[in-house]
Length: 302
Image (cartoon, rainbow, N blue to C red; front, side):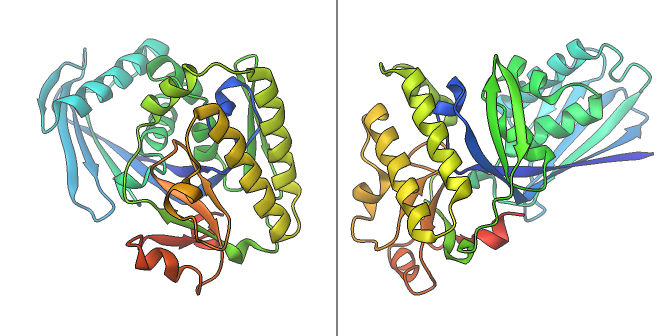
């Protein structure tokens, strides 16, 4: 018997960094995601294969079923991370794999790993569903983070996300703006480390309560925006506010100062995707600069 699980990817449109301190964030689950299939085998091991979006195997490992020791792997670092997740899963559900001789696990991404759409969060949510444990607990005990990406993995529509007393509050929102055809996601051709970015944010000294209040207010205004110009104003306000906190120059003034539309960083600043406003004509600006992965909002979001 084969078990199958699937989780959506994620993009945080507002609230990056501040969401860790309780700010309200606007997030969209993506049409891109990751599947996980499990089937029983007769050998006492976990045979793990991870496939990229093109079907190629980018990672493979074998673990002992009883204690998850690594028997063989193509990447020690990835195997150790996976081992950590398996151990934490077993800790949360001691019955995990008790009645099984062995299993073959195969994951398959529908997006390039370097895009930063949630290769880890989709894996964690899928694993938690397989093991029958709480995905937020698996994330927080193994890695940390706000958990908004886990919420995205479980939803098929835009959401707002907020941590209240370290518990997630998730609400589906009707974010379906009339100007969504003017929204695009542009990949910056480089992967950014969320862990390092969060550590840098934590080192900054500022009024966190005030930032949470201001970011939450911007998020609410973004959700309620009816016209593009209003939405663009909120994007710019968000960028400038965080730029002052992070002591970093906004991505538009640093890389695209002459672009006519609005630009907002998403996730860890300086990598992954940016959100831009414009049309097919203005987007030629990015193509000419070598940024060729440009995804319309309607093709990225539900």
